[in-house]
Length: 241
Figure 1 (tube, helix red, strand yellow):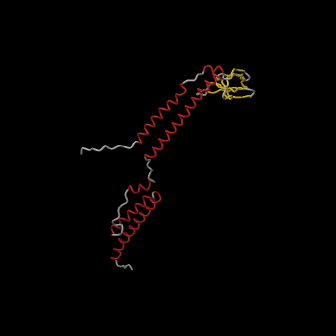
Figure 2 (cartoon, helix red, strand yellow):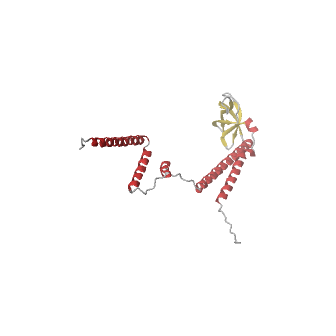
Figure 3 (cartoon, rainbow, N blue to C red):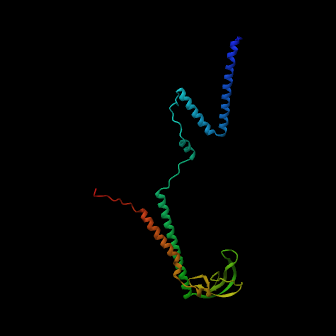
């Protein structure tokens, strides 16, 4: 109970001021922490943990000697999982697959070139002449797409009483429907026909194997490099020491 003595009133005034100032300070600190928690909850949790650690250091609590969390530890949790390192075995598998793909392309281009040369020779030596009746022709656009570069024509013909309607190879000009032209049929495959005028200009050539030659050189270089990678490293021993 507060006394009515004048000396008592003098001591109560400053005490109430101190209490009000402390309550105001704690309230402002609470508002600041609450605002930071809404904007940056991670930073607030770290600051609160640091405040508890300092309090325990003063009071001699269990966290007095605890180590402060480092920046690397906090950043490590935000970076995500550790990336997987690509090893030597992965690149060896990739290299082997590339070599297999080049080898397959070499086989395909070589067989295609040999087959094309054999067809030209066979049709020139043993081709069967037929009368081709043009059914229709369609234009093939150039690379720019502004004009027609060539035409693809389909013709009707018959061999040994069997009628065929096939794409005629070598027709680069437009022919009206119903036009009759001279064609040559492959004796081993009657569904292959070519314009006689175009066949006379074509010849079997080694230039057909140009792509195969480039692929062969590429395959040799890749195989040599792959063999060097697989070769075990040799170590030299100094016998004089």
